[in-house]
View (cartoon, rainbow over the protein chains, first blue to last red):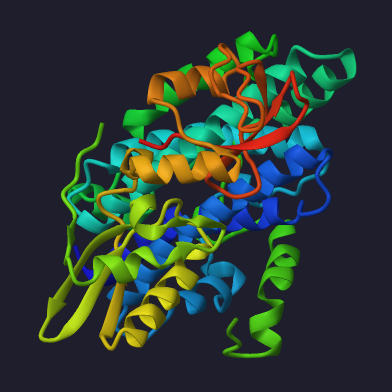
Length: 251
Length: 166
């Protein structure tokens, strides 16, 4: 597999964590309780840590003398290939948890499979990240149950968020050209293989939470091709502000 | 139990023992298990460290501290960050576990007990203040990525628990 395609494949995984990490980071100091605030930002930190490993690897593969910061901060909106789900705004706590829950279950299965990749660096990142993502998945699943099987109001809100975000779940399994190449080379994860398990795991939690699994025929997509929702531009202007204003700035 | 051989030169070990985790000053990086090798190569001390958590902000500081400590001892040093094999709480030494407890952070339990504790199924994490086992988890995520937050139902003190990672 050529280097450019491998970089694209890596960005397809990394961008999800980057953008979700940024969304969670927005909650710093704004979480509903101190413990949740700390948890959300801890998860954000884990995701950023994982992203750094991916971007460092991509930078190493790149022949254009790029750094991890170029990948993180200096791409245009169309060049980010994260799924639409992770860029959705926090709206309320129900949305934040539902988005996390729907992503964590996918993320866990993806990393679990990536441990069998033929690419040693991706295997190392997957093994490391999987331990962290196990905690994320436990956290978001617990909250789905608490909110779903909680008060009338909490149930209404979490169900609303699940219903609303469900249309973004199909895209998680969609494959770009780079994905297909990576799968063929034995490096990438065949997402078809984890889809059934994903639906099974998610359904089990929803059932325990006394929530309904949405039935949809229409799903929204585009993020993986760089076509984002209207929320993405605002997120990026916030995230890229420092590097755009003070180019090359370092800690 | 994940067993991993570490190669640390006898000459370098006492110097590295002086370097501690900036978040947990009582714990040396050797006892924390993040130093995976430290050997001389053409007169340069090459140290390989691995992060506890991917996003651990202490790693850069630890790398700089290692270089500074070795430089002071008269060695030129090179520090590399490696990801594989992934760090495990099993690598914290007995001495390290004791240092954690003394500092007020409950040391990680074995994996099966950890899971039960974090799921709130059993009360096995001992309060670092009064040693009571009547404790409860407040949050799976604590003041740093590697810790969960607990509170003691007897003495009412909150305390950190170093999460098991295997």
